[in-house]
Length: 129
Image (cartoon, rainbow, N blue to C red; front, side, top):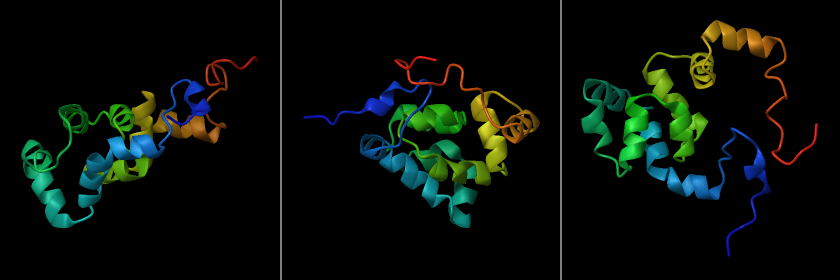
């Protein structure tokens, strides 16, 4: 019997739970491989060939190649593992977060300094204002 997941009722939020962990296991292991300089060099030289060494599905590989981090998260990626891709590309975590929100790095930083996103549209679907 599947577990009840009341947290799935949060718009725009993917919770990294056991199911997501299983789905993204090879994606996250690929990301961790980027901690080694030799692997980063091989990945940067031929991304597709390096990704093909991992038993990831095609959607995961395409998401990595297009640097669609939101899609990677939906496909089981964990942001702390995905940060290794950003580091390989010379991006800061703040730059990555900005790209995930459709903002520039400066816009994202300014939004966070001002207290983060508005709660509007980010409540539980069934919650009253």
